[in-house]
Length: 242
Image (cartoon, rainbow, N blue to C red; front, top):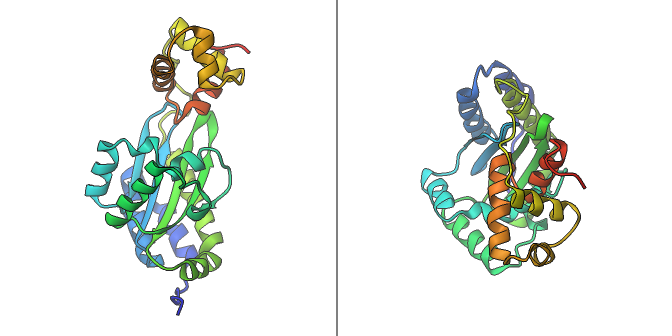
C-alpha cells in the first residue's frame, strides 16, 4: 500500500527561509525541510556568477567524499540531464542507460541516496545555476503520490531557496574572465559553430584527448558548470566570435 504522505505547512517553511541571514543558515533550513517532508534527503547546489560553488543538504559525508573522489560529477545523469533542462524532472526520466550511470546509481543507493528523486534546475543572472533535489527510497507508486501531493510546494521552495542564495552572493557582477589561450579560443569557437569533438579535433589537427584538455581548461577559467555553459560564457564575454 502506498505511503500516506502528511501535509506540510509551506508558509512556515517559507518563513524559515525568509529568516535565513546567511549561507550557513540554509543548511539548517534544508535539514528542517527534509524532516518536514519525511524523506531521506534534500540537497541544494549553487554555482554563482563567478563560478564559486556552494552546497548544502543531507547526504552523508561519506557519500559526498566518495562523489568527489570518483569525480561522479562527470557521469551523474542528474547533473548532466538537468544542465540541459529548464523544468523539474523525475530521475526516472533521465538517461541511465550507460554502464557508468548504472554503476553510479547502484553505489548511490548503497550510500542511502534513495532510488527515487525529483530535481528542479534553476538559472539566475550572469550565468548563475542551481539545482534543488528531493530523494527517497520507496516504490514508484509511493513516489508518484509524493510528487502529486508536494510537487508544487517543492518548486516554490526551490526557487525561494535560490532567491535567498542570490541575496547572499556578495557581488553579482562576475569578475573579469581569465584570458583564454589561442588554442582554448579555437576549441570554444569550433564547439560554438556546432562541431562535435571529433570534427573539432580533426580541424585543429590534435587528438580528442588534447581537445578535451583545452575544453576543460577553458571551462575552469570561465567558471562554467559544463561545456555548453562555457561556450555561452565565452560568447557573452566576447572571448569568441561566431
